[in-house]
Amino acid sequence: MWRVLTDKEREILRSNSTIQHFKRNELIYCEGDEPKDMMCLLKGKVKIYKDGVGGRSQIIRMIKPVQYFGYRASFAQEDYLTNASAFEASTVCMIPMTVVTGLLMSNPNLAMFFIRQLSIDLGISDERTVNLTQKHIRGRLAESLLFLKDSYGLEEDGATLSIYLAREDLA
Image (cartoon, rainbow, N blue to C red; front, top):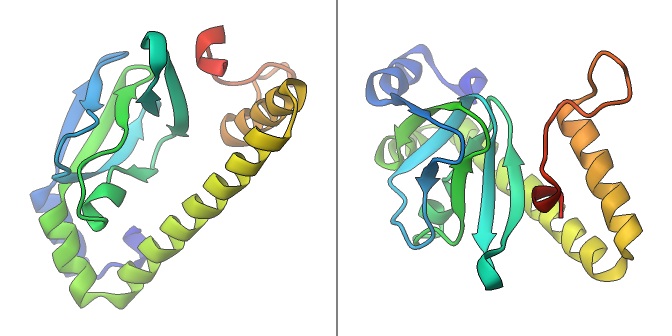
């Protein structure tokens, strides 16, 4: 995102953003909350999830460093439909959506950046919906493992995923 901003716009973002630290499993936002900030994960991992029946939650997306999140609901002018929590100790840059919206109105390249991001996310979501409804459990597990490998890479041994997931989170 920084590449499409002018020096003045970067300074506006810097002066209006705040840095927050979250402990493991600490909530960043809750379903039903009004979105006020766009977030950029600087360090750690964040899970976007939906609470399900019987106290189980379904992870919808994992956020890794320097990914933006939490802005879709604001653009849709609705409350959050999901929850976000720190999967591990995390540092998040919070940028007020009023500032982001102001920059979008004056910078068409920034607007295209977000259109592209939302389009990519929609494509991934569509593909996941088809795969989850049409693949057997082994195929879904294999796809999840490949996604984690592509997203987080492997440890030095070349065989171990570079992310720790409990079985429940993988499920």
